[in-house]
Image 1: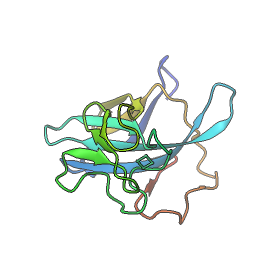
Image 2: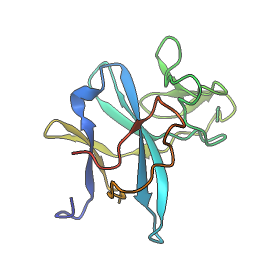
Image 3: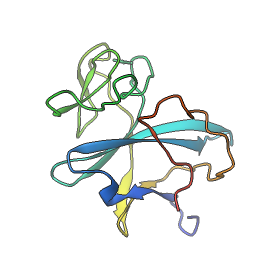
Image 4: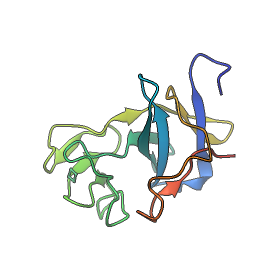
Length: 149
Ligand code: FES
C-alpha cells in the first residue's frame, strides 16, 4: 500500500500462526540503491498473543534459524534457536543468550495486526509475483509468499 508514508504489507492472516508458534516467510525487499534483495523473516506469535518479527538470519553466520531442523524454537519452546549451531535467542528481544553469537541480537522488524492480518511496516518489498523464487525447493519449511492476496 502506498497511500501512507509508511509501507504496509500483509504477510499472512493472524490466525495462520498458532499461539506459541512461528512461521518463516521468504520475501524480497528493495534496498536503498533500488536493488531487490532477499528478505527472509520469521513471525512469532506468543502465547500471550503478541506478534514479534525478526529477519530470519542468525547474526553469527547468516543462516535461517530453521534451516535443517525446520524448527524455530528450542525444545522447550522458550527460546528461538538456530537449528544449525544452537544459538539461543530471547523471543521478545531477539537477544542471543547462548551460542556463537552470544551478546548479539536478531534484527527486529516492525509488525502490526491490521484487519486480521499480520502486516510488515516500513519495508519496501518487491511485489511482483512473476519473480523467480530463489528459495524454491531449497527448504520446504519456509512459506513462500511474495505477494499475498
Ligand atoms: S548461524 Fe549462528 S548459531 Fe547458527
